[in-house]
Length: 328
Image 1: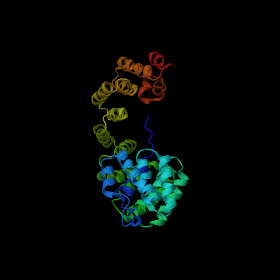
Image 2: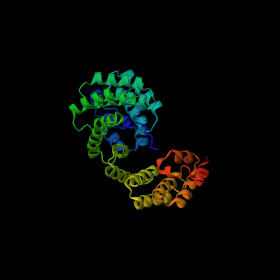
Image 3: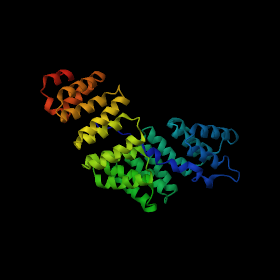
Image 4: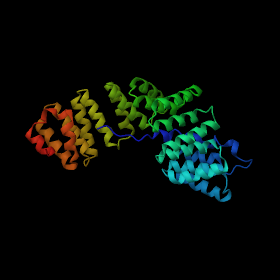
């Protein structure tokens, strides 16, 4: 029942490309069409709606400026509007075909739209324009990662890290690639380094929790699950996995406490009742376990199927009451 991830690190990897317009300086005229300090402040505060309003105002004065359209595309990507972002980036590239930031962000937009082969093409073009830039190598790695070409992705992340050893998103992407190759120790080492650079990145913490769990490092998995709950107490899965790790550690009372908290916070989520029922089976509290399992199945009938294939309930697979509850 592991949470299914969308590979969103490819999205965050490009954030530094346009932030502050650092990649665009050589394309600006002696009278810049917009204030980099203004957009920096909006980005810093994640006020992308305000940033878009500002760029739209500047476009009224400079309608054909490539850097403005590129900036608009970047902002729209941060507003989860990849389709309109692509339109803006295409216009920017019509004006400046070798605008590195626009090429990179077009690759990002195509990733968001699931057009991975095209995304790879534009990542290559960006790399041709700036062959010694860690961001461009990282972007190539991201494009290959989305195509599940993990070993190839790793080679580009390594190139990025050769240029800049502290390239955070190269560390992140390379760690994820190693994870998908089941190279857990390598993945943990890289993602731990990333975590030191970006300590509040929830996606990295989820990966670190999963990988440590898969590798059998349960105490470390518990550490990361605890940090996830501390950072985002609104995510039911975070509590479920903390309880599940405590279950594996046979810390049953602590697991029950986590699930009680989860149930109080999310009373309509079947996962809390389901998780608690697993722990109670392990404690041989069968009657209460079945009552909680029944609650979870009443909220979502698919939990009956899960229970029938969940080894935590193996001792009950032939129990009449258990079979009645799950509908078998």
